[in-house]
Image 1 (cartoon, rainbow, N blue to C red):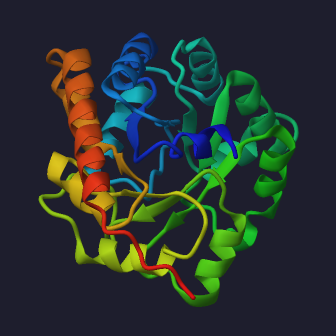
Image 2 (image 1 turned 120 degrees about the horizontal axis):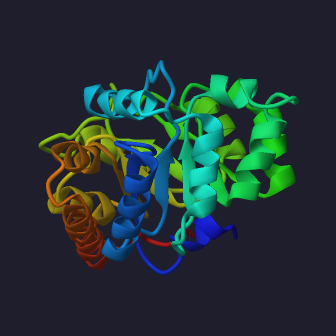
Length: 270
């Protein structure tokens, strides 16, 4: 099992997202340390792109702050290489940046990402049908390739996604873009039901921001939760950021553990 897969082995995983370079690289290093102290099992570190189609206004604004501060793919990789936490780092970005990097499209970026210490990639605008080149490069350099499964992903298309995914599958809790929500969508439970028989960790994101969200999602069968906008909001507020990131991570991790303890075992199939 990969480094990312191992992160879900001992219990539910917490996967917080922040945007690298928001508001600058030095601050990002402190933010990553704070999330690790709070109990993050995997950290999703966004590489900013000018057209973030999967992200809502909160993360779009973080991406703009990062771009305004000068973050580039190469400075992003330098930042990751300098991190000093014992938590797998997943790069969330868009395919254009991966394709345009270096002299050899796709392969050059994946090789550089592996050298920097990145453990996996999330590329929300890459259709599974066109993912073969990136999948091969990830296999060559030992990175996981994590796909997002939407509430509308079903049947043969779901099977194709699950054939290509590794590390964990990112379960989109609701249709639309990222952003904190007040409740857990019923679509989350439906999606987890469709994925129950696939042998890969399932982490639910899009709207997760509160302890009870994490508890309900993990109790429903998820192996972890992904939370982004709630952390990005704390960074944007700029008040005792490291302390509040650590506290929010600890809160969500505790909620996930509680949900795991409440989970009803699935009946064995005969």
